[in-house]
Image 1 (cartoon, helix red, strand yellow):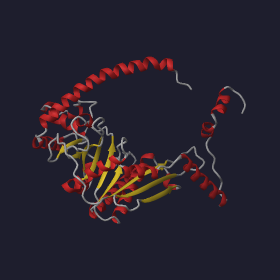
Image 2 (cartoon, rainbow, N blue to C red):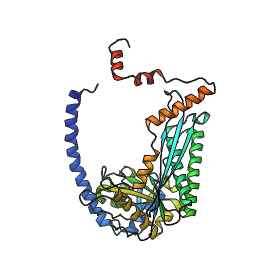
Image 3 (tube, rainbow, N blue to C red):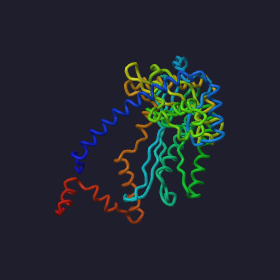
Image 4 (cartoon, rainbow, N blue to C red):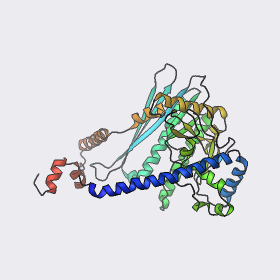
Length: 397
């Protein structure tokens, strides 16, 4: 162990002391946000005018919430579920290419879980893709993650086509995919093709009328806070809105956790951002927050839905009720059950990675190809601790 606790101790004391001061500042900022939320709650038309002018004239890279019709402080209880419902979820994991490994490859594993609320048996689906050879040239982790995310959405589409309505499809994380910005034109073209592929999937989900939502557990987003800053800013401050951050450190769930009771959702908003504006109109990003906790411990998640779902009150209600019911299944660890199961099925363990590597090496040997070796650096990392200590002391192994 190389951590010097004597050096860390005074830094820990300072950290806790500063945290106490920060907590006081944060509390004051949160109280002001709550007051502004109440003051602006019914001011939907004026707020929309302000953010639309802002989007046209400047600050196109800002990310903030735009009101739709519901008051900013809306607290909407979930409707009762009357019809039987099927929930489908998809999640994925990956093995990133490792130049220190004996074999250079990547792997994407996507799992789907179909959970019927009637007495039928859940359906499990797997899609595993090995990535190797020339396609791995300059293959970044971000690109691998993007390919995995699109694979999850494609599985949702494939599963949804075979399920009668009503159903709700869930993925973990935002619907707006993160695209790595590269200075290399070739990579820009690759990412654009990925994005277009995703848009095609979104279009098919729309055509098939499969209600589709992304769930973000314990979000740190400040989209609503940013809207309150825009509404609160003077004309001069609005002209410099990119540097106007009076409520830094306060998140949306910091204020909504005070007003949403268990099971309730917030108002529905649309997400304003440079990236989401590129999405097809029917599948631009909308969202609401929902309290899936209990009276003693509020716990908020953010739920993202495409525009075509947001425009149908019955579908919004369906997604809302489904999220609450799914989280109730998990008890104190409030998280959608179907997503949890999809995640469990998708995770590739270290042992499975080693097994895939052994299979590849065995097949290479069978076909008479030279066998790769792990790097010396990785070999040293793999040594037991006691052997590594001998090396440090200059001893022989």
